[in-house]
Structure formats: structure tokens, C-alpha cells
Image (cartoon, rainbow, N blue to C red; front, side, top):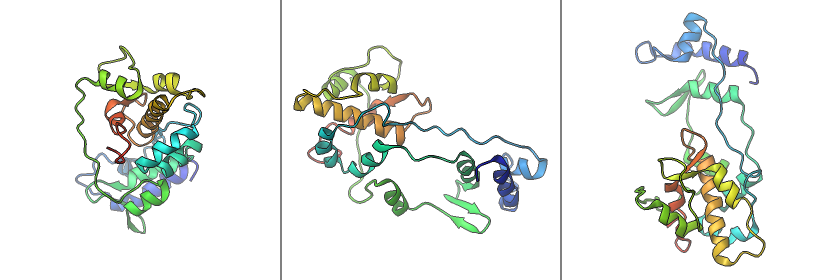
Length: 219
């Protein structure tokens, strides 16, 4: 499924599954009933390995977060996405049932699928923390040694700023500096791959707070 034609064909064949009432604005209905042609969706994904250099000194601390398998995966390269295939899946997703409605039946993604594909941990206690951003600049200085200055109204920093200041850990860095660079690396990767915001250019401060402590995993 590498061109727009197979995508249009699949959606049109799925028109019988489109509910006539609450799917009035579904793209598949416009394709099947009105013959309209839509472009494939633009995929927002960010590369990590060409902006942030992984340092083996980070491993000791990342292992404590239980994110090492995931970080090892994305630090090498991001998987290549097929825009047509992703667009088709988006249009076949039913939010009321949390399933894909394929021509052959329903299918969904399980937590086991997620952990097998990404290496993310799914067992244990849920991660709960405050998303309050009061005093975020001072807290950021305590976690990574600096703050971005005046960049915008939201709490956080741009990916460009993070990569510019934490792209490569100095060879003579002491342990405290290595931990700061590790936090910045994790912040960049998690924000860019798992929790990207609507702008696609900023990392939210609340994800940096995840890595405030190492001794108890994601404290």
C-alpha cells in the first residue's frame, strides 16, 4: 500500500461499515458516495539519533527507569512509516469501540502488542505525578542545569534548544553533569516519540519531571 489508489479502494469497500448517522463527516463516506479524493495524512514523527547523540554513560540511569529497551530501539533509528497505510488505519478506527473495522472484521491493538513492538514496560504500578508547572524554570535548572529563557508562554523548551545544549555529553563530564544530560536525553526522546504536542516543536516540562529521581524507577 504505497500509493493513494489502494488506500482509496480499501476505504470505498469499507463504506458499508460507515454508520449513516454519526459518520456523516467520515472521509470514507465522501470517497464512496461522492467520489472525492483525499491526500494521505501527513505523519508527524521526529528523528532522534541525528539530533541527540546517545552516550553509554546514560545507560546506568536509563536502566533504572525500565525504559532501556525502548531507548535502545529509538536511539538507533525510527521505524519508517507508510503514510498510505497509516492513513487507512486512521480512517478505519472507530473511537466508540476502540477498534479498527476492517473488511474481514474488527481488530485492535493490545498492551502486549505495544510492549512487543516498542519494548515499553506494561507491568507494575501506574505512573502518577502532578502536572503543575509552578516554578518550572527553577525546577528545570535543578534537573538539567539550565532553563531556556524566554521561548513562549508554555512550560517547556523547544527540541532545537534541547539538542543545541544537550546534543552530546562532554567527555570530561562529572557524574552530576552526566545525569543532567541523561534527563535531557530522555526528555527529548519521550516527548518527541511518545508525547509529541500539537506544535511538533516543543517538549512539555511535565515529561521532564518524570525523570526527577532514579532510585525508584520513574519517581
